[in-house]
Image 1: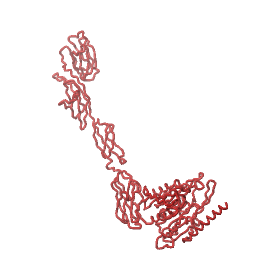
Image 2: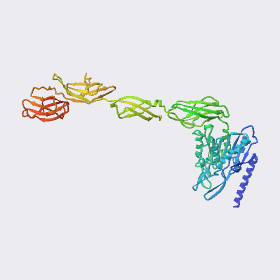
Image 3: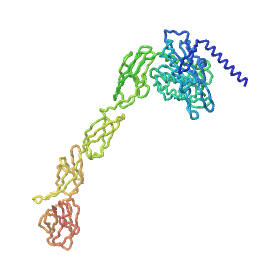
Image 4: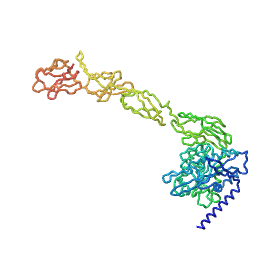
Length: 638
Protein backbone atom coordinates (compact mmCIF):
# COMPACT_ATOMS: atom_id res chain seq x y z
CA UNK A 1 0.00 0.00 0.00
CA UNK A 2 2.94 2.33 0.87
CA UNK A 3 4.53 1.90 -2.53
CA UNK A 4 1.17 2.48 -4.23
CA UNK A 5 0.59 5.63 -2.18
CA UNK A 6 4.09 6.85 -3.08
CA UNK A 7 3.42 6.19 -6.79
CA UNK A 8 0.11 8.10 -6.79
CA UNK A 9 1.65 11.00 -4.89
CA UNK A 10 4.63 11.08 -7.27
CA UNK A 11 2.32 11.04 -10.32
CA UNK A 12 0.26 13.92 -8.88
CA UNK A 13 3.39 15.97 -8.15
CA UNK A 14 4.74 15.41 -11.66
CA UNK A 15 1.37 16.38 -13.26
CA UNK A 16 1.21 19.52 -11.08
CA UNK A 17 4.76 20.47 -12.12
CA UNK A 18 3.81 20.00 -15.77
CA UNK A 19 0.81 22.31 -15.36
CA UNK A 20 2.97 24.93 -13.65
CA UNK A 21 5.51 24.80 -16.46
CA UNK A 22 2.71 25.04 -19.05
CA UNK A 23 1.06 27.99 -17.34
CA UNK A 24 4.38 29.79 -17.00
CA UNK A 25 4.67 29.75 -20.80
CA UNK A 26 1.41 31.68 -21.28
CA UNK A 27 0.11 34.80 -19.58
CA UNK A 28 -2.77 33.32 -17.61
CA UNK A 29 -4.81 35.53 -15.33
CA UNK A 30 -7.06 34.11 -12.61
CA UNK A 31 -10.28 36.09 -12.67
CA UNK A 32 -13.33 36.11 -10.43
CA UNK A 33 -16.91 37.19 -11.00
CA UNK A 34 -19.91 37.35 -8.70
CA UNK A 35 -22.70 35.14 -9.95
CA UNK A 36 -25.78 33.85 -8.14
CA UNK A 37 -24.38 35.10 -4.81
CA UNK A 38 -21.23 33.06 -5.36
CA UNK A 39 -17.72 34.04 -6.36
CA UNK A 40 -16.86 32.12 -9.50
CA UNK A 41 -13.39 31.67 -10.97
CA UNK A 42 -12.02 31.41 -14.50
CA UNK A 43 -8.68 31.63 -16.27
CA UNK A 44 -8.33 34.40 -18.83
CA UNK A 45 -5.66 34.20 -21.50
CA UNK A 46 -4.91 37.25 -23.63
CA UNK A 47 -2.05 36.73 -26.12
CA UNK A 48 0.85 39.16 -26.22
CA UNK A 49 -0.08 39.93 -29.79
CA UNK A 50 -3.50 41.27 -28.82
CA UNK A 51 -4.31 44.43 -30.80
CA UNK A 52 -7.08 46.59 -29.40
CA UNK A 53 -7.84 47.88 -32.89
CA UNK A 54 -8.62 44.39 -34.20
CA UNK A 55 -11.71 42.37 -33.14
CA UNK A 56 -10.49 39.20 -31.41
CA UNK A 57 -12.20 35.79 -31.35
CA UNK A 58 -12.87 34.08 -28.01
CA UNK A 59 -12.81 30.36 -27.11
CA UNK A 60 -14.44 28.93 -23.95
CA UNK A 61 -12.85 25.68 -22.73
CA UNK A 62 -14.78 23.50 -20.23
CA UNK A 63 -13.31 20.78 -18.00
CA UNK A 64 -14.99 17.44 -17.30
CA UNK A 65 -16.73 15.93 -14.26
CA UNK A 66 -14.37 16.03 -11.26
CA UNK A 67 -11.80 18.03 -13.23
CA UNK A 68 -10.68 21.62 -12.97
CA UNK A 69 -9.75 24.53 -15.18
CA UNK A 70 -6.00 23.98 -14.90
CA UNK A 71 -6.14 20.36 -15.99
CA UNK A 72 -8.27 20.97 -19.07
CA UNK A 73 -6.19 23.98 -20.08
CA UNK A 74 -3.09 21.79 -20.03
CA UNK A 75 -4.80 18.78 -21.62
CA UNK A 76 -6.44 20.74 -24.43
CA UNK A 77 -3.23 22.68 -25.15
CA UNK A 78 -5.32 25.36 -26.75
CA UNK A 79 -3.37 28.35 -25.45
CA UNK A 80 -0.55 27.27 -27.77
CA UNK A 81 -2.87 27.80 -30.70
CA UNK A 82 -4.38 30.96 -29.17
CA UNK A 83 -0.88 32.46 -28.87
CA UNK A 84 -0.17 31.68 -32.52
CA UNK A 85 -3.48 33.03 -33.79
CA UNK A 86 -4.00 35.92 -31.40
CA UNK A 87 -7.19 34.57 -29.83
CA UNK A 88 -8.46 34.99 -26.27
CA UNK A 89 -9.34 31.86 -24.24
CA UNK A 90 -11.56 31.57 -21.18
CA UNK A 91 -11.28 28.46 -19.00
CA UNK A 92 -13.94 28.55 -16.22
CA UNK A 93 -14.16 26.48 -13.05
CA UNK A 94 -17.25 24.44 -12.09
CA UNK A 95 -18.51 24.22 -8.51
CA UNK A 96 -18.66 21.00 -6.49
CA UNK A 97 -21.84 18.91 -6.60
CA UNK A 98 -22.74 15.91 -4.44
CA UNK A 99 -24.09 12.69 -5.99
CA UNK A 100 -25.50 9.69 -4.14
CA UNK A 101 -26.01 6.42 -5.98
CA UNK A 102 -25.78 2.76 -5.06
CA UNK A 103 -25.06 3.66 -1.40
CA UNK A 104 -22.10 5.75 -2.57
CA UNK A 105 -21.83 9.51 -2.08
CA UNK A 106 -19.39 11.53 -4.18
CA UNK A 107 -18.63 15.24 -4.34
CA UNK A 108 -17.12 16.37 -7.61
CA UNK A 109 -16.88 19.54 -9.67
CA UNK A 110 -19.76 19.47 -12.16
CA UNK A 111 -21.50 21.70 -14.66
CA UNK A 112 -25.23 22.15 -15.00
CA UNK A 113 -24.69 20.82 -18.52
CA UNK A 114 -27.89 18.85 -19.11
CA UNK A 115 -26.45 15.58 -17.79
CA UNK A 116 -29.19 13.69 -15.96
CA UNK A 117 -29.98 10.07 -15.15
CA UNK A 118 -32.54 7.91 -13.39
CA UNK A 119 -30.90 6.06 -10.49
CA UNK A 120 -32.88 3.83 -8.13
CA UNK A 121 -36.08 5.39 -9.50
CA UNK A 122 -34.94 8.96 -8.83
CA UNK A 123 -33.90 11.48 -11.48
CA UNK A 124 -30.53 13.02 -10.74
CA UNK A 125 -29.59 16.24 -12.55
CA UNK A 126 -25.99 17.37 -12.31
CA UNK A 127 -25.67 20.76 -10.54
CA UNK A 128 -29.40 21.28 -10.85
CA UNK A 129 -30.52 24.88 -10.27
CA UNK A 130 -27.26 26.54 -11.31
CA UNK A 131 -27.21 28.82 -14.33
CA UNK A 132 -23.75 27.95 -15.60
CA UNK A 133 -24.46 28.98 -19.21
CA UNK A 134 -25.69 32.35 -17.95
CA UNK A 135 -22.38 32.68 -16.11
CA UNK A 136 -20.50 32.27 -19.40
CA UNK A 137 -22.56 35.03 -20.98
CA UNK A 138 -21.72 37.29 -18.02
CA UNK A 139 -18.03 36.54 -18.51
CA UNK A 140 -18.38 37.29 -22.24
CA UNK A 141 -20.06 40.60 -21.45
CA UNK A 142 -17.19 41.46 -19.11
CA UNK A 143 -14.69 40.68 -21.88
CA UNK A 144 -16.60 42.92 -24.27
CA UNK A 145 -16.35 45.72 -21.71
CA UNK A 146 -12.55 45.38 -21.51
CA UNK A 147 -11.41 44.15 -24.93
CA UNK A 148 -12.21 44.50 -28.60
CA UNK A 149 -14.06 41.19 -28.90
CA UNK A 150 -15.18 39.79 -32.26
CA UNK A 151 -18.70 39.04 -31.07
CA UNK A 152 -19.56 37.16 -34.26
CA UNK A 153 -16.80 34.63 -33.57
CA UNK A 154 -17.26 33.16 -30.09
CA UNK A 155 -16.52 29.43 -29.76
CA UNK A 156 -16.85 26.66 -27.16
CA UNK A 157 -15.07 23.37 -26.61
CA UNK A 158 -14.67 20.95 -23.71
CA UNK A 159 -14.09 17.36 -22.77
CA UNK A 160 -16.48 14.84 -21.19
CA UNK A 161 -18.94 16.85 -19.08
CA UNK A 162 -17.28 19.87 -20.67
CA UNK A 163 -18.49 18.48 -24.00
CA UNK A 164 -22.03 18.25 -22.62
CA UNK A 165 -21.60 21.85 -21.45
CA UNK A 166 -20.57 22.95 -24.96
CA UNK A 167 -23.74 21.46 -26.43
CA UNK A 168 -25.86 23.26 -23.83
CA UNK A 169 -24.11 26.55 -24.59
CA UNK A 170 -24.99 26.16 -28.27
CA UNK A 171 -28.61 25.22 -27.56
CA UNK A 172 -29.30 28.01 -25.06
CA UNK A 173 -27.05 30.77 -26.47
CA UNK A 174 -26.70 29.93 -30.13
CA UNK A 175 -27.52 33.55 -30.92
CA UNK A 176 -24.07 34.48 -29.51
CA UNK A 177 -22.04 31.30 -30.12
CA UNK A 178 -20.62 30.77 -33.63
CA UNK A 179 -19.46 27.14 -33.31
CA UNK A 180 -18.72 24.39 -30.78
CA UNK A 181 -16.38 21.38 -30.75
CA UNK A 182 -17.33 18.99 -27.89
CA UNK A 183 -15.03 16.05 -27.08
CA UNK A 184 -16.48 12.84 -25.56
CA UNK A 185 -19.67 14.58 -24.37
CA UNK A 186 -23.05 14.53 -26.12
CA UNK A 187 -26.40 16.29 -25.52
CA UNK A 188 -27.63 15.64 -21.97
CA UNK A 189 -31.01 14.06 -21.26
CA UNK A 190 -32.29 17.21 -19.55
CA UNK A 191 -32.14 19.27 -22.73
CA UNK A 192 -32.81 16.81 -25.57
CA UNK A 193 -36.27 18.33 -26.06
CA UNK A 194 -34.97 21.91 -26.15
CA UNK A 195 -35.08 23.91 -29.38
CA UNK A 196 -31.84 25.81 -30.04
CA UNK A 197 -32.15 29.59 -30.09
CA UNK A 198 -29.89 29.89 -33.12
CA UNK A 199 -28.01 27.98 -35.79
CA UNK A 200 -24.53 26.90 -34.63
CA UNK A 201 -21.85 24.97 -36.48
CA UNK A 202 -20.92 21.79 -34.59
CA UNK A 203 -17.97 19.43 -34.70
CA UNK A 204 -18.27 16.48 -32.32
CA UNK A 205 -15.26 14.25 -31.53
CA UNK A 206 -15.77 10.83 -29.91
CA UNK A 207 -14.16 7.39 -29.64
CA UNK A 208 -16.17 4.25 -30.34
CA UNK A 209 -14.49 2.43 -27.41
CA UNK A 210 -15.26 5.18 -24.89
CA UNK A 211 -16.10 3.37 -21.63
CA UNK A 212 -17.04 6.52 -19.68
CA UNK A 213 -19.56 8.12 -22.06
CA UNK A 214 -20.48 5.39 -24.51
CA UNK A 215 -20.54 6.14 -28.23
CA UNK A 216 -23.76 4.35 -29.13
CA UNK A 217 -26.06 5.18 -26.22
CA UNK A 218 -24.59 8.08 -24.27
CA UNK A 219 -24.40 6.01 -21.08
CA UNK A 220 -22.16 6.96 -18.16
CA UNK A 221 -20.07 4.08 -16.86
CA UNK A 222 -18.11 4.91 -13.76
CA UNK A 223 -19.58 3.84 -10.42
CA UNK A 224 -22.97 3.09 -11.94
CA UNK A 225 -24.05 2.39 -15.50
CA UNK A 226 -26.82 4.86 -16.42
CA UNK A 227 -27.88 6.73 -19.50
CA UNK A 228 -27.10 10.43 -19.23
CA UNK A 229 -27.61 11.70 -22.78
CA UNK A 230 -27.94 10.96 -26.47
CA UNK A 231 -25.66 8.62 -28.36
CA UNK A 232 -23.26 10.16 -30.84
CA UNK A 233 -25.31 9.39 -33.96
CA UNK A 234 -28.41 10.91 -32.35
CA UNK A 235 -26.43 13.98 -31.34
CA UNK A 236 -25.18 14.51 -34.89
CA UNK A 237 -28.71 13.97 -36.23
CA UNK A 238 -30.05 16.57 -33.76
CA UNK A 239 -27.74 19.29 -35.09
CA UNK A 240 -27.86 18.19 -38.73
CA UNK A 241 -31.66 18.44 -38.76
CA UNK A 242 -31.81 21.72 -36.87
CA UNK A 243 -29.08 23.32 -38.95
CA UNK A 244 -30.81 22.00 -42.10
CA UNK A 245 -27.57 20.54 -43.36
CA UNK A 246 -27.32 18.10 -46.25
CA UNK A 247 -28.58 14.58 -45.61
CA UNK A 248 -25.49 12.96 -47.11
CA UNK A 249 -22.06 13.36 -45.54
CA UNK A 250 -18.75 13.95 -47.25
CA UNK A 251 -16.73 11.07 -45.81
CA UNK A 252 -12.98 11.26 -45.22
CA UNK A 253 -10.63 8.65 -43.70
CA UNK A 254 -7.48 10.10 -42.14
CA UNK A 255 -4.15 8.42 -42.95
CA UNK A 256 -3.57 5.57 -40.46
CA UNK A 257 0.09 6.11 -39.59
CA UNK A 258 0.40 5.61 -35.83
CA UNK A 259 0.26 2.06 -34.58
CA UNK A 260 -2.26 2.95 -31.87
CA UNK A 261 -5.29 0.78 -32.70
CA UNK A 262 -7.33 3.80 -33.81
CA UNK A 263 -8.76 4.81 -37.17
CA UNK A 264 -9.98 8.39 -37.57
CA UNK A 265 -12.90 9.25 -39.88
CA UNK A 266 -14.61 12.56 -40.67
CA UNK A 267 -18.26 12.94 -41.67
CA UNK A 268 -19.02 16.43 -42.99
CA UNK A 269 -22.60 17.67 -43.45
CA UNK A 270 -22.56 21.10 -45.09
CA UNK A 271 -24.91 23.64 -46.66
CA UNK A 272 -26.72 24.39 -43.41
CA UNK A 273 -28.79 27.45 -42.62
CA UNK A 274 -26.72 30.64 -42.29
CA UNK A 275 -23.62 28.81 -43.50
CA UNK A 276 -23.64 26.27 -40.67
CA UNK A 277 -22.17 22.78 -40.85
CA UNK A 278 -22.29 19.65 -38.73
CA UNK A 279 -19.17 17.47 -38.49
CA UNK A 280 -18.32 14.20 -36.74
CA UNK A 281 -14.78 13.05 -36.02
CA UNK A 282 -15.26 9.34 -35.31
CA UNK A 283 -12.33 7.59 -33.64
CA UNK A 284 -12.71 3.87 -34.26
CA UNK A 285 -11.13 2.18 -31.24
CA UNK A 286 -10.77 5.52 -29.49
CA UNK A 287 -11.29 5.80 -25.72
CA UNK A 288 -12.41 8.60 -23.39
CA UNK A 289 -9.57 10.90 -24.40
CA UNK A 290 -8.39 14.14 -25.97
CA UNK A 291 -6.09 12.91 -28.72
CA UNK A 292 -2.73 14.62 -29.37
CA UNK A 293 -0.10 14.26 -32.06
CA UNK A 294 2.37 12.85 -32.69
CA UNK A 295 1.02 9.97 -30.60
CA UNK A 296 -2.22 9.94 -32.56
CA UNK A 297 -2.93 10.41 -36.26
CA UNK A 298 -5.18 13.37 -35.46
CA UNK A 299 -4.49 16.14 -32.96
CA UNK A 300 -7.87 17.19 -31.56
CA UNK A 301 -6.64 20.71 -30.70
CA UNK A 302 -5.40 21.37 -34.23
CA UNK A 303 -8.56 19.85 -35.73
CA UNK A 304 -10.77 22.00 -33.47
CA UNK A 305 -8.84 25.15 -34.39
CA UNK A 306 -9.10 24.38 -38.11
CA UNK A 307 -12.84 23.90 -37.68
CA UNK A 308 -13.25 27.17 -35.77
CA UNK A 309 -11.07 28.98 -38.33
CA UNK A 310 -13.29 27.69 -41.14
CA UNK A 311 -16.19 29.45 -39.40
CA UNK A 312 -14.37 32.78 -39.01
CA UNK A 313 -15.40 34.38 -42.26
CA UNK A 314 -18.85 35.87 -42.22
CA UNK A 315 -21.28 34.81 -44.89
CA UNK A 316 -24.20 37.16 -45.66
CA UNK A 317 -27.26 37.36 -43.46
CA UNK A 318 -30.41 36.50 -45.39
CA UNK A 319 -34.01 35.86 -44.41
CA UNK A 320 -37.35 35.04 -46.04
CA UNK A 321 -39.82 37.81 -45.27
CA UNK A 322 -42.95 36.62 -47.10
CA UNK A 323 -44.30 33.97 -49.45
CA UNK A 324 -47.21 33.61 -51.85
CA UNK A 325 -48.13 30.09 -52.92
CA UNK A 326 -50.17 29.15 -56.02
CA UNK A 327 -50.88 25.82 -57.70
CA UNK A 328 -47.86 25.76 -60.04
CA UNK A 329 -45.74 28.63 -58.74
CA UNK A 330 -44.55 30.24 -55.53
CA UNK A 331 -43.25 33.76 -54.95
CA UNK A 332 -40.69 34.42 -52.21
CA UNK A 333 -39.60 37.80 -50.88
CA UNK A 334 -36.15 37.66 -49.31
CA UNK A 335 -33.92 40.22 -47.68
CA UNK A 336 -30.15 40.37 -47.34
CA UNK A 337 -29.58 42.45 -44.22
CA UNK A 338 -25.78 42.15 -44.08
CA UNK A 339 -23.15 41.30 -46.69
CA UNK A 340 -20.81 39.58 -44.26
CA UNK A 341 -17.09 39.66 -44.94
CA UNK A 342 -17.46 40.40 -48.65
CA UNK A 343 -19.90 41.69 -51.24
CA UNK A 344 -22.94 39.57 -52.11
CA UNK A 345 -22.43 38.12 -55.58
CA UNK A 346 -25.64 36.09 -55.87
CA UNK A 347 -28.96 35.79 -54.13
CA UNK A 348 -32.26 34.04 -54.75
CA UNK A 349 -34.26 30.97 -53.72
CA UNK A 350 -33.30 27.30 -53.92
CA UNK A 351 -35.89 24.54 -53.65
CA UNK A 352 -36.43 20.81 -53.76
CA UNK A 353 -39.01 18.15 -52.98
CA UNK A 354 -36.69 16.95 -50.18
CA UNK A 355 -35.50 18.90 -47.12
CA UNK A 356 -32.43 21.16 -46.97
CA UNK A 357 -32.20 22.42 -50.57
CA UNK A 358 -28.99 24.15 -51.66
CA UNK A 359 -27.83 26.01 -54.75
CA UNK A 360 -26.90 22.58 -56.11
CA UNK A 361 -30.67 22.06 -56.48
CA UNK A 362 -33.09 24.14 -58.53
CA UNK A 363 -32.58 27.80 -57.72
CA UNK A 364 -33.22 31.32 -58.95
CA UNK A 365 -30.67 34.12 -59.21
CA UNK A 366 -31.99 37.60 -58.49
CA UNK A 367 -29.46 40.46 -58.66
CA UNK A 368 -26.68 41.32 -56.18
CA UNK A 369 -25.99 43.16 -52.95
CA UNK A 370 -28.06 43.77 -49.85
CA UNK A 371 -31.73 44.67 -49.60
CA UNK A 372 -35.03 43.08 -50.60
CA UNK A 373 -35.48 40.83 -53.60
CA UNK A 374 -38.33 38.80 -55.10
CA UNK A 375 -38.03 35.35 -56.70
CA UNK A 376 -40.70 33.26 -58.37
CA UNK A 377 -40.52 29.47 -58.52
CA UNK A 378 -42.28 28.10 -61.60
CA UNK A 379 -43.35 24.78 -63.12
CA UNK A 380 -44.35 23.37 -59.73
CA UNK A 381 -46.81 20.49 -59.38
CA UNK A 382 -50.22 21.21 -57.76
CA UNK A 383 -50.80 19.96 -54.22
CA UNK A 384 -47.15 18.97 -53.78
CA UNK A 385 -44.87 19.61 -50.79
CA UNK A 386 -41.65 21.53 -51.42
CA UNK A 387 -38.79 22.82 -49.29
CA UNK A 388 -37.22 26.18 -50.05
CA UNK A 389 -34.65 28.58 -48.64
CA UNK A 390 -33.57 32.05 -49.69
CA UNK A 391 -29.82 32.27 -50.10
CA UNK A 392 -27.05 34.82 -50.49
CA UNK A 393 -23.47 34.16 -51.57
CA UNK A 394 -20.20 36.04 -51.05
CA UNK A 395 -16.60 34.92 -51.44
CA UNK A 396 -16.67 33.30 -48.00
CA UNK A 397 -19.58 31.02 -48.83
CA UNK A 398 -23.34 30.74 -49.18
CA UNK A 399 -25.77 31.53 -46.39
CA UNK A 400 -29.28 30.11 -46.29
CA UNK A 401 -32.36 31.31 -44.46
CA UNK A 402 -34.50 29.06 -42.31
CA UNK A 403 -36.20 26.41 -44.40
CA UNK A 404 -39.76 27.03 -45.58
CA UNK A 405 -41.91 23.95 -46.13
CA UNK A 406 -44.95 24.68 -48.30
CA UNK A 407 -47.58 22.82 -50.30
CA UNK A 408 -48.78 24.14 -53.64
CA UNK A 409 -52.49 24.73 -54.08
CA UNK A 410 -54.91 22.70 -56.15
CA UNK A 411 -55.93 24.01 -59.56
CA UNK A 412 -59.58 24.50 -58.67
CA UNK A 413 -60.41 26.33 -61.90
CA UNK A 414 -59.72 23.11 -63.76
CA UNK A 415 -60.94 20.64 -61.18
CA UNK A 416 -64.25 22.07 -60.00
CA UNK A 417 -66.62 21.63 -62.92
CA UNK A 418 -70.29 21.48 -63.96
CA UNK A 419 -71.14 19.02 -66.72
CA UNK A 420 -74.37 18.86 -68.77
CA UNK A 421 -74.88 15.34 -70.09
CA UNK A 422 -77.67 13.40 -71.81
CA UNK A 423 -77.53 9.61 -71.87
CA UNK A 424 -79.82 6.74 -72.84
CA UNK A 425 -81.53 4.57 -70.28
CA UNK A 426 -79.95 1.41 -71.63
CA UNK A 427 -76.50 2.94 -70.87
CA UNK A 428 -77.18 2.63 -67.14
CA UNK A 429 -75.15 2.03 -65.06
CA UNK A 430 -73.12 4.81 -66.71
CA UNK A 431 -69.40 5.45 -66.34
CA UNK A 432 -68.50 9.14 -66.46
CA UNK A 433 -64.92 10.00 -67.46
CA UNK A 434 -63.46 13.50 -67.25
CA UNK A 435 -60.30 13.74 -69.34
CA UNK A 436 -58.68 16.31 -67.06
CA UNK A 437 -59.28 14.24 -63.95
CA UNK A 438 -59.11 10.72 -65.33
CA UNK A 439 -61.55 9.46 -62.71
CA UNK A 440 -64.49 7.12 -63.34
CA UNK A 441 -67.88 7.44 -61.63
CA UNK A 442 -70.79 5.04 -61.81
CA UNK A 443 -74.35 6.35 -62.01
CA UNK A 444 -76.79 3.62 -61.10
CA UNK A 445 -80.24 5.20 -61.29
CA UNK A 446 -82.17 7.38 -63.76
CA UNK A 447 -84.36 8.83 -61.01
CA UNK A 448 -81.93 11.65 -60.16
CA UNK A 449 -80.86 14.38 -62.54
CA UNK A 450 -78.03 16.08 -60.58
CA UNK A 451 -75.04 14.27 -59.06
CA UNK A 452 -72.23 15.84 -56.98
CA UNK A 453 -69.00 13.83 -56.99
CA UNK A 454 -66.40 14.59 -54.29
CA UNK A 455 -63.02 13.03 -54.98
CA UNK A 456 -59.25 13.51 -55.00
CA UNK A 457 -57.32 13.94 -58.23
CA UNK A 458 -53.96 12.40 -59.07
CA UNK A 459 -52.40 15.29 -57.10
CA UNK A 460 -54.59 14.58 -54.07
CA UNK A 461 -56.67 17.74 -54.50
CA UNK A 462 -60.20 17.77 -53.17
CA UNK A 463 -62.58 18.55 -56.01
CA UNK A 464 -66.25 18.52 -56.98
CA UNK A 465 -67.81 17.68 -60.32
CA UNK A 466 -71.53 18.51 -60.58
CA UNK A 467 -73.10 16.31 -63.23
CA UNK A 468 -76.47 17.44 -64.62
CA UNK A 469 -77.63 14.17 -66.10
CA UNK A 470 -80.66 13.80 -68.38
CA UNK A 471 -81.67 10.19 -68.98
CA UNK A 472 -83.63 9.59 -72.23
CA UNK A 473 -86.17 6.83 -71.62
CA UNK A 474 -87.91 5.13 -74.60
CA UNK A 475 -91.30 3.50 -74.07
CA UNK A 476 -90.87 0.09 -75.73
CA UNK A 477 -94.39 -1.15 -75.16
CA UNK A 478 -96.56 -2.07 -78.17
CA UNK A 479 -100.35 -2.04 -78.39
CA UNK A 480 -102.25 -4.44 -80.66
CA UNK A 481 -105.73 -3.87 -82.14
CA UNK A 482 -108.23 -5.19 -84.69
CA UNK A 483 -110.31 -3.06 -86.99
CA UNK A 484 -113.36 -4.01 -89.13
CA UNK A 485 -113.86 -1.51 -91.92
CA UNK A 486 -117.25 -0.74 -93.51
CA UNK A 487 -116.23 -2.86 -96.47
CA UNK A 488 -116.10 -5.81 -94.07
CA UNK A 489 -112.31 -5.82 -94.49
CA UNK A 490 -110.56 -6.87 -91.30
CA UNK A 491 -107.30 -5.17 -90.21
CA UNK A 492 -104.92 -6.26 -87.42
CA UNK A 493 -102.25 -3.71 -86.51
CA UNK A 494 -99.48 -2.99 -83.94
CA UNK A 495 -99.00 0.49 -82.43
CA UNK A 496 -95.78 1.73 -80.79
CA UNK A 497 -96.56 3.53 -77.54
CA UNK A 498 -93.64 6.02 -77.80
CA UNK A 499 -94.75 9.25 -79.42
CA UNK A 500 -92.69 11.74 -81.47
CA UNK A 501 -89.94 9.33 -82.45
CA UNK A 502 -88.54 7.64 -85.54
CA UNK A 503 -89.79 4.09 -86.23
CA UNK A 504 -88.67 1.07 -88.20
CA UNK A 505 -90.65 -2.17 -88.01
CA UNK A 506 -88.75 -5.42 -88.40
CA UNK A 507 -89.54 -9.10 -88.99
CA UNK A 508 -88.18 -10.91 -85.94
CA UNK A 509 -87.99 -14.25 -87.75
CA UNK A 510 -85.56 -12.89 -90.39
CA UNK A 511 -84.22 -9.96 -88.32
CA UNK A 512 -84.69 -7.77 -91.37
CA UNK A 513 -86.38 -4.41 -91.66
CA UNK A 514 -89.75 -4.21 -93.39
CA UNK A 515 -89.52 -1.79 -96.25
CA UNK A 516 -91.74 1.24 -95.92
CA UNK A 517 -92.97 0.40 -92.41
CA UNK A 518 -91.57 3.52 -90.71
CA UNK A 519 -94.67 4.79 -88.93
CA UNK A 520 -95.91 4.51 -85.38
CA UNK A 521 -98.70 2.15 -86.58
CA UNK A 522 -97.97 -1.05 -88.46
CA UNK A 523 -100.82 -2.80 -90.31
CA UNK A 524 -100.22 -6.56 -90.40
CA UNK A 525 -101.23 -8.68 -93.34
CA UNK A 526 -99.42 -11.89 -92.54
CA UNK A 527 -99.12 -13.81 -89.29
CA UNK A 528 -95.65 -13.64 -87.75
CA UNK A 529 -93.39 -12.04 -85.12
CA UNK A 530 -92.76 -8.32 -85.33
CA UNK A 531 -90.88 -5.62 -83.40
CA UNK A 532 -90.14 -1.92 -83.77
CA UNK A 533 -86.78 -0.07 -83.65
CA UNK A 534 -87.51 3.28 -81.99
CA UNK A 535 -85.08 6.26 -82.18
CA UNK A 536 -85.59 9.22 -79.85
CA UNK A 537 -82.91 11.89 -80.11
CA UNK A 538 -79.51 10.16 -79.74
CA UNK A 539 -81.02 7.06 -78.19
CA UNK A 540 -82.28 3.92 -79.92
CA UNK A 541 -84.11 0.95 -78.44
CA UNK A 542 -86.05 -2.04 -79.79
CA UNK A 543 -89.36 -3.40 -78.54
CA UNK A 544 -89.93 -7.03 -77.68
CA UNK A 545 -91.06 -9.27 -80.54
CA UNK A 546 -94.88 -9.59 -80.76
CA UNK A 547 -96.46 -12.86 -82.02
CA UNK A 548 -99.47 -12.07 -84.25
CA UNK A 549 -101.93 -14.63 -85.78
CA UNK A 550 -104.18 -13.60 -88.66
CA UNK A 551 -107.17 -15.93 -89.38
CA UNK A 552 -107.94 -14.70 -92.85
CA UNK A 553 -111.68 -15.57 -92.39
CA UNK A 554 -114.30 -12.82 -92.56
CA UNK A 555 -117.06 -12.72 -90.00
CA UNK A 556 -120.25 -13.01 -92.12
CA UNK A 557 -123.74 -13.85 -90.93
CA UNK A 558 -124.29 -16.47 -93.61
CA UNK A 559 -122.88 -19.98 -93.53
CA UNK A 560 -123.27 -22.78 -91.07
CA UNK A 561 -121.75 -20.76 -88.11
CA UNK A 562 -122.75 -17.36 -86.88
CA UNK A 563 -122.09 -15.22 -83.73
CA UNK A 564 -124.46 -12.72 -82.21
CA UNK A 565 -124.61 -10.16 -80.85
CA UNK A 566 -121.25 -9.00 -82.22
CA UNK A 567 -119.95 -6.76 -80.75
CA UNK A 568 -121.11 -7.92 -77.34
CA UNK A 569 -120.87 -6.73 -73.75
CA UNK A 570 -120.85 -10.14 -72.07
CA UNK A 571 -122.59 -13.13 -73.72
CA UNK A 572 -122.11 -14.10 -77.32
CA UNK A 573 -124.20 -16.92 -78.91
CA UNK A 574 -122.72 -19.37 -81.41
CA UNK A 575 -125.33 -20.81 -83.79
CA UNK A 576 -124.69 -23.87 -85.94
CA UNK A 577 -126.86 -24.73 -88.97
CA UNK A 578 -127.59 -27.56 -89.20
CA UNK A 579 -127.08 -28.91 -85.71
CA UNK A 580 -123.65 -30.55 -85.04
CA UNK A 581 -123.18 -34.16 -85.92
CA UNK A 582 -122.06 -36.84 -83.58
CA UNK A 583 -118.39 -35.81 -83.93
CA UNK A 584 -118.71 -33.75 -80.75
CA UNK A 585 -116.95 -30.53 -81.90
CA UNK A 586 -115.50 -28.12 -79.27
CA UNK A 587 -115.32 -24.36 -79.03
CA UNK A 588 -111.99 -22.55 -78.29
CA UNK A 589 -111.68 -18.88 -77.28
CA UNK A 590 -108.30 -17.19 -78.17
CA UNK A 591 -106.94 -13.66 -77.86
CA UNK A 592 -105.63 -11.73 -80.85
CA UNK A 593 -102.12 -13.18 -80.29
CA UNK A 594 -103.43 -16.74 -80.58
CA UNK A 595 -103.24 -17.59 -76.91
CA UNK A 596 -105.97 -20.08 -75.87
CA UNK A 597 -108.16 -18.67 -73.12
CA UNK A 598 -111.10 -21.10 -72.86
CA UNK A 599 -112.31 -24.52 -74.17
CA UNK A 600 -115.93 -25.63 -74.02
CA UNK A 601 -118.22 -28.21 -75.78
CA UNK A 602 -120.87 -27.36 -78.34
CA UNK A 603 -124.30 -27.56 -76.75
CA UNK A 604 -126.84 -28.11 -79.49
CA UNK A 605 -127.79 -25.60 -82.14
CA UNK A 606 -126.99 -22.63 -79.91
CA UNK A 607 -124.08 -22.37 -77.48
CA UNK A 608 -123.73 -19.35 -75.18
CA UNK A 609 -120.14 -18.15 -74.55
CA UNK A 610 -119.51 -15.90 -71.51
CA UNK A 611 -116.95 -13.15 -72.29
CA UNK A 612 -117.91 -10.92 -69.39
CA UNK A 613 -114.68 -11.57 -67.46
CA UNK A 614 -112.43 -10.68 -70.42
CA UNK A 615 -111.00 -7.27 -71.17
CA UNK A 616 -112.30 -5.12 -73.98
CA UNK A 617 -110.76 -6.19 -77.29
CA UNK A 618 -110.85 -8.60 -80.20
CA UNK A 619 -111.10 -12.36 -79.61
CA UNK A 620 -111.16 -15.40 -81.90
CA UNK A 621 -113.81 -18.13 -81.65
CA UNK A 622 -112.65 -21.45 -83.18
CA UNK A 623 -114.79 -24.48 -83.93
CA UNK A 624 -112.57 -27.59 -83.73
CA UNK A 625 -113.55 -31.16 -84.81
CA UNK A 626 -111.08 -34.03 -84.45
CA UNK A 627 -108.26 -31.47 -83.92
CA UNK A 628 -109.12 -29.79 -87.21
CA UNK A 629 -110.26 -26.21 -87.34
CA UNK A 630 -113.66 -26.20 -88.99
CA UNK A 631 -114.31 -22.47 -88.70
CA UNK A 632 -112.94 -19.27 -87.11
CA UNK A 633 -114.86 -16.10 -86.26
CA UNK A 634 -113.88 -12.83 -84.59
CA UNK A 635 -115.89 -11.22 -81.86
CA UNK A 636 -115.48 -7.80 -80.37
CA UNK A 637 -115.84 -7.50 -76.59
CA UNK A 638 -116.92 -3.98 -75.63
